[in-house]
Amino acid sequence: SGRGTTPVEAAAQGRHGIGNDLNPLAVALTRGKLSNPTLEEVLKRLEKLESDYSSKDWSIEDEPEKIRMIYHDNTLRQMVYLKEILDWRKPGVDAFIVAVLMGAMHGNSRGFSSLPMPNTFSMGWNYISRKVKEEPEKFACPDRDSFQVLRGRVKRQLSKGLLTGSGTAIYGDVRELDQKVDHDSVQLLFTSPPYLKVIKYGLYNWIRLWWLLGDYKEVDEKLDDSHSIGP
Image (cartoon, rainbow, N blue to C red; front, top):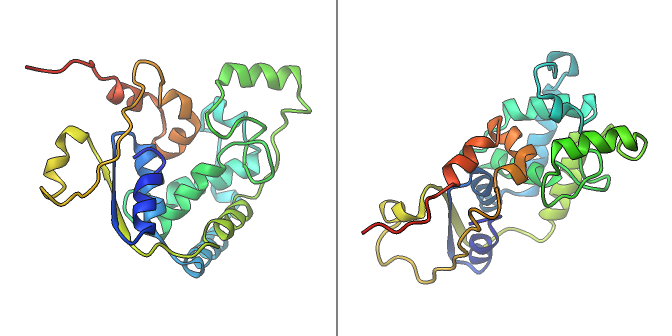
């Protein structure tokens, strides 16, 4: 399902959109978008999260150095807190907030939480480390308030209104999809095979997967298929 565009579009057309993926990042993005909460619900949840947060309660000492070098300490404490509190594994307001947060993890403007880098993929940590040393002013970590960043993004994303249909995000192998979707229930199948052996979906999203899972390696191990068709 990738970033969830197809199942979300199906839901926007009043249909039931189903997204299936073996990459947990794709599932988190799809599930969050299909959760379809109201702006009021999301803002209320963000207000509660912010009121319950206290920086002194959250340490970043145990976080990987490659993560600590791309976020300001204040921002990282908030992200560690959200990582612990938000539940993205089931549909709902939390899942939607996580999907929004994934889009804000890194980029080049005030709408992102990290030092400057592309928002489409995670730059390699060795490259980032070298740039921080070579251009410390340009690659300084901005002190971004995660709650403020999320509010701005949520208001923009929900300004278009709610989906009229519904949807489901399935985490699993597409070859086992018949165990989760009723036969003859699908009217249109839209698929884009992954570029396995060409793109490392885990490595290229190692920052987002740190937040979701703690590490990216298990994703690439799971997606590293043999590319052979059995008899």
